[in-house]
Image 1 (cartoon, rainbow, N blue to C red):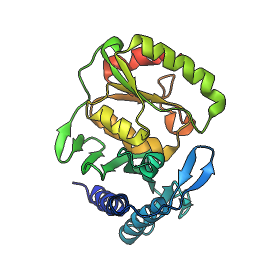
Image 2: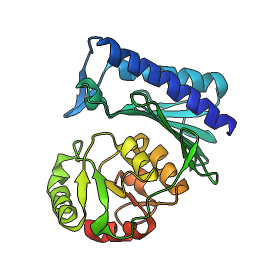
Image 3: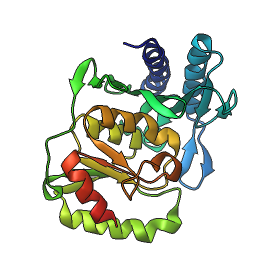
Image 4: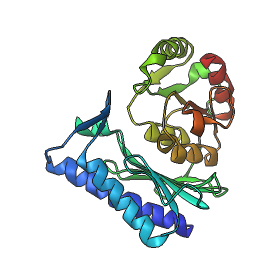
Length: 258
């Protein structure tokens, strides 16, 4: 395992232990709304600080882009760590066990390493560019699904951009009619990891942040899948609109989203 990936795994597990201790102990949560339908708790902040501490101890000159702390150490560094300390906060608040820690590393803007850790299931998804994707040290691949009509498709509601809800509902209607099923679990990073592991055959969502997508996108690419924006291009980290799937289903998904 690459040394940077080792550090990312260490950081994700440390954050995950904070999250699971809070979940098991039933600690009272200080829930604050960042915007409509978007929440943060003291657990998010503690988990993020744990990741930052591990990263800074190992690589003090690297930049960090974290959901709660924003950009740290400037934006011009060669390496940047993209961190979501608790993707699926609303699920976590309600005791719905679908949430994760997501960490990606970019080198000169290119995704090079990824970790998604689900502490409630102790599932660790990892990837390094050119070295494949893994779940708990076992190699994973996207499914063999070839037709959208046979695909189980994941999605997320555009809760941060309700002005685009009409477009999303039109997309949802088309996918409900043209796939074998649509699932919305509420943690985009984990949904993307599930595509990489073959549990979902495709995924789409609009209005996401970079930290929601970065790690999951690399996992899918290293597992043999395809990722793009709704035009199939590589600008999803900038636009926040992402589509992903098996090589055969991906193009069919894009057609359905137009």
